[in-house]
Image (cartoon, rainbow, N blue to C red; front, side):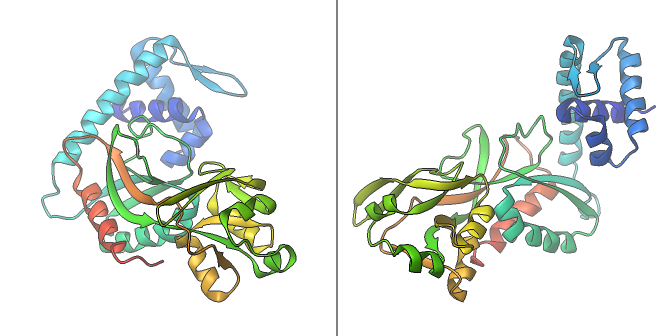
Length: 296
C-alpha cells in the first residue's frame, strides 16, 4: 500500500479520533481506513492507536509517529505548493474553516463563485468557532472575526465587522425601548458566548460606558441569536452582515444608534509560512477584492 496515503489516513484518524469520520472526510470506506492504519503500524512495527468501542486514542509510539507524519506531510504539501502548475490552472483541494454565521451568510456563496473561476479546485469548508491548530488540522485558511487575532498566525484583514443593537417591534412594544445603555440592565438580552456575553461596551463622543446585562439566553452562534431576536426573545448585539436586511425590512429595529459598539474585523488567518500555494494566494486575493465593497 502507498505509505504516504497511509500516513495521511493515520494523521486524520489521530486528529479526529474516529475511523468513521476519517472515512467520510477522505471519501473512502471504513475498511480501507482500517487497512491503511494497519499498514503503517506493520511498517513501523508497533501499535499506534488504542481502539475501544467508544474512542480512539494514541499510544506513546503513536504520539511520536503523529508528529513525524505531520512534519513529512507538511514538507510534501510545501513542496507541492511551491511548484506552480505549468499551465497556470489551479488544482487540488483547499481546507477552509469559518464561523457558522459568516459561513452561512456570505462565505459559502463567495467560495462557490471562486470555484466557478477555478473548476479544477475543490474546497472543504469546516464551519465552527472552536480553536484549531491550523497545521495539525491541515487547514489552509481560517476566516475569523476578532479584534485581537492570534499573533502566531498571519492575519490578512478582509473587511470591517460592525455591530448593531437590535430587537423586534413586538418585544419593544411589550417592554419599551431603551434610551441609553444603562436601560439595558432592565431588559432581556441575548448574549453571544464568545463576544461580550453579559458585559456590553458602548462609546459616544469619547465617553465609554460598560453595562452588565441580564442575558436571558446565550448562544455560541450569532445566527441563533438573530432568530431569537426575530422571535421577540429580547435585545441582541448583531453583526451588520446578518442584521441589515432584517432592519431594512422592519423585522428588527436598531437601538441606540448614537452609541458605537466595539469594532472588529474579519480576518483571513493562515500559518506563518514563507510561501503560500498559488491556490491559497488566489483565494486570499479574491476574498479581499470581493469584500472591498461590503455587501452588507
